[in-house]
Length: 314
Image (tube, rainbow, N blue to C red; front, side):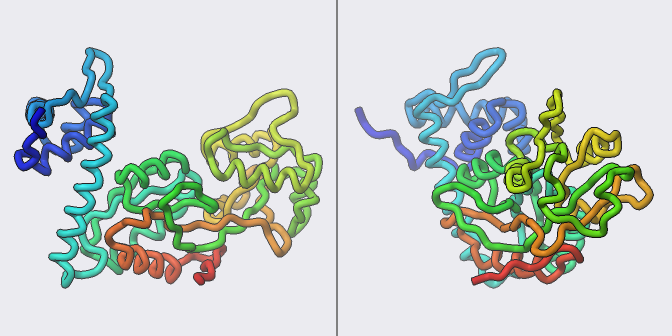
């Protein structure tokens, strides 16, 4: 059997392939590619005809990528990234951090990071076009490795072969307790002060849950174990649960900045050295614009608000 004539392939068709593989839905893939669904479907059929393979199994309810389709989609992502790299080489004289940048962030960071960071980046890099994506750590890592994201703000450590992390800042934890709680009478707390306390946690999948569990284990604190499962999906839900007297929780420093004085809760810092999490900008080692990410990291560290400290970069 003769090899397919790959010279007939187009970059547009490869983008269609990657979009359908990501979305598992022709309508969403077409919207992402800014074309009509018939146009995208015709492109996929032409690609299948050129390669002589079936890329997707279609039904009324689902779209599944075939094994060979998955392998070809991975190759298409590599090709498209190399094409992007060629475009960057050609535009080397252009302003740094210009054009699109696909940036991910975790839910316990994004709502408190973006309000002060986005205006600063717009001032520093007016030609930058951010495409933001919020998801939990595992999904963001998958997006990075799958070439769907360029970089992501994540809490360390992060597991994933082929990834690199640029440390950004250290974010201490604070303790949120009901306003009438005995611990609210103290100016600062130690981890041992949490012994026996019911600490409310986020649901599985949040890296903040794992970090809070480590603190709970060191302090011998109770973890959602008072006869009910009180796990939440957001920090704001945890705040309301604490206000209702269901227990206490741990809040990272940027989220602590939004605490409202006079609420039914009290926010207390830890004594030094306070437990903390380190936030980093994570990217693939093969990302073609590492200097841009280094500039971005420098700007983030430059404009940090009170409450967090820049990480030491080796």
